[in-house]
Image 1 (cartoon, rainbow over the protein chains, first blue to last red):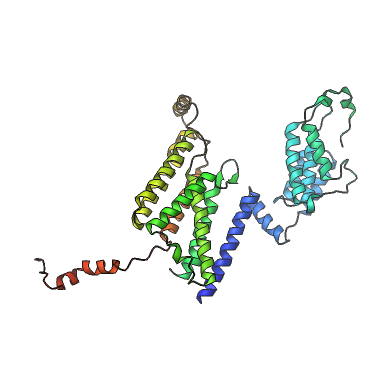
Image 2 (cartoon, each protein chain N blue to C red; image 1 turned 135 degrees about the vertical axis):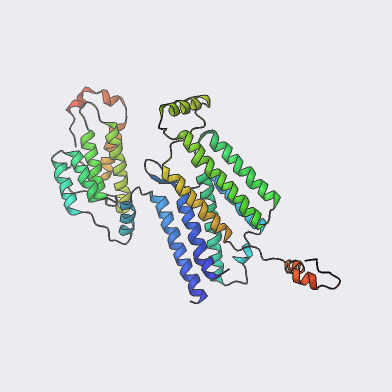
Length: 166
Length: 228
């Protein structure tokens, strides 16, 4: 093989490998599915499992939030779909919401999931047209989760018990 | 140096070391970028490689070389720097007194190597000793002090040791795979460093070799053959 060809192929391979390493450092995938899903989404080949997503929505609407999250995680193992991540965050919100107090741990996980959804959405804007939801945009959900985790005087307002879960 | 080694083998080795060197195995897998101090150490290491003749930058980047060859050379240098930083970062403990002492240890050893100006072979040996001892210190000695012990006596001794040192010695428990990854990354880095294009021998080096050749010494006028 001629030397310029070797050098050219080596250069392209090195730059490609370096780009993969930079992407791994930037995204910090935790499991192999996240790595493969990330590469698949780069070339537009990533698909959410529709059956698992439908199962997740069914559980979500039946207030079975743990089951809903299990199905939704199975639907989007690489965590590349903003809609699925939105529903996961919403499941954390609904499970953690309380008339007297909110579960900060669940709200914290919901905040992480909705942040992921916002990061994945084109332009950071995510609106879900689902009549079952009280909040349709990721921004609303994020603000609600943040408010739920904030300690202030309104937490001691007795009228809070009449509040409704969104 | 062949084009395959410069364009394919060396970047592949150093990029793999860059990837492996950043892996931190714990509850999950994390990829840690190099700290500022390891960048300084990596710079010192590359300067030591150049001064010892283990790395000749003019054989990678030179005006007389084609643009593509110079680009390959630049990739080798960039990946060498990244790999050196990640290997040194991987071998440095994460916290407490070990972090301080190993950082000082690596800094002083590299500074000493810079000042001593060893030749290529001695520098590579010295580098193997430096990286190997740091590997043993972190992944064998400190890991055995910090890891969850099996027996109750061992746990009590570790707890006493931890209390006596105000908790500044023990590190976070490491995954067993971390040591193997570190061993692989260090070994690959040393192979890559040994495969770097070194400085060419000077014009008198060949003459010294010829004079030291036994046949020529014996054939030289006025030299008597040693008794058999």
